[in-house]
Length: 207
Image 1 (cartoon, rainbow, N blue to C red):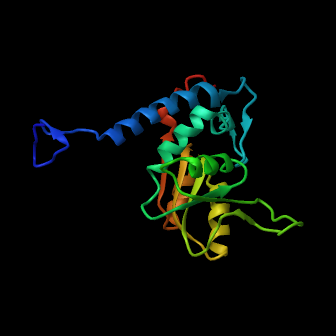
Image 2 (cartoon, rainbow, N blue to C red; image 1 turned 135 degrees about the horizontal axis):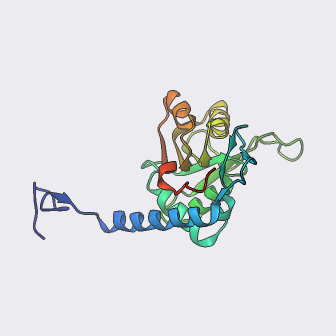
Image 3 (tube, helix red, strand yellow; image 1 turned 60 degrees about the vertical axis):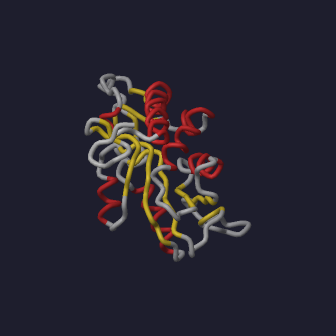
């Protein structure tokens, strides 16, 4: 293969994608299509959706349509797995949006092997746990989110992990709505990364 600038992955000064990067790029492209087709919905004029953040919006990401679907959940796991820092083998997030994502990741061949979720309220029966699953305060974790708006949901998971002595290595999401949530996470000194931003989608149907 011809080389340029001493790199085995460049041709004519242009860096070439590795087979893994090419596969991830294709998976991300297909995932974007599926989110747009199945999860992105638009409100009727004058009837905006009420988001979990308390804000209103003319469009909504019904992410369960993709996080609980075989093809798209596998794509989510494939893409998010590339954002997990080396050496981190545990992921978790707030119920209920993060739960299917965590499950997909731990079932993926290239994903982490341990997962957990944070309850919005601790149960009054059984073990009465706030955090359920395979959470170990001695292991660094990645917090996952389906859609980040104001960041309150993901920060609840972050606070719970830190309260019980855990270390948050990074926060990752499928979609960042760009409504301040990612900035709130970063102000805590945490790294935040999302697969998609709003400008990745066709929002012309929003009133």
